[in-house]
Amino acid sequence: MFDWIDEIFLWCMLAGFLAQLVDGALGMGYGIVSATFLLNFNIPLVSISSSIHSSEIFTSAASGYSHYKFGNVDKKLFKKLVIPGVLGAILGAMALCLLGTDFERFAKPIMAAYILFLGGKYIFMFFKKVFLTKEIQHIGRLAGIGGFLDSFGGGGWGPLVTTTLLRTSHDPKAIIGSVSLTEFFVTFFSALTFFMFLGLQHYTEILGLIAGGVIAAPLGAKLAGKLNTRWSYLFIGILSSIWSLNVLLKSI
Image 1 (cartoon, rainbow, N blue to C red):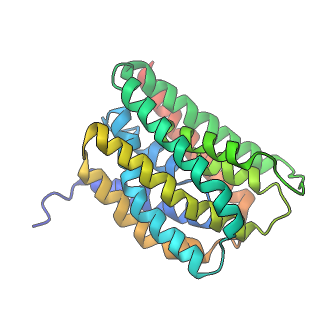
Image 2 (tube, rainbow, N blue to C red; image 1 turned 180 degrees about the vertical axis):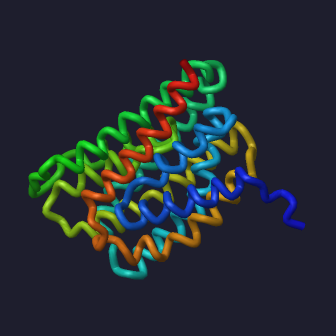
């Protein structure tokens, strides 16, 4: 009955659990943690992003609902983020579907380098002293770029959008909750675009990510604003850097 459960499913379940735990608590990390795991398996680049966003529909729904239930959502901020984020995600998914297959040999190292860059950004954030500002301008543009990079690179919504908004004097829990709820819509339309171009592929990886992520979602939302953020940044940064470097070395 469960003969489809294999080593990859279990690795993806672990990846989904860790990714959603971090993402729910910090408002970022699902895509980058999941992608660093999947990059080390023989999975096409387009399918990596497709699998992440297909699974993230369920995990982000659980996370967004949990944040809403715990009162972590700022409705005004959510409205500013959702439409530009969705449009950016659709464009990013379309670009990857049209270019990713033809340029797979070059795109996978580029994606690994992108994740390495994000990992370095997390490590930098561990050492950087954050100076708060009253307001961030052009939130819609920020969400659009974040949605595009998230679809095209398999991650990046949280590292760009959440970290930028956390520089404001707003309640960190409200920022994390609003970005997490918006992520459901960004993910849904990204996955829908992938499905229209590719159909449903690599269901074992998707189910593994879903299983681990759904288990972790309520715990991550409960931990929002309570974890030591700086040390969490360091953990994500080191993890993603090591795994992406491994992919780059294999590519060379």
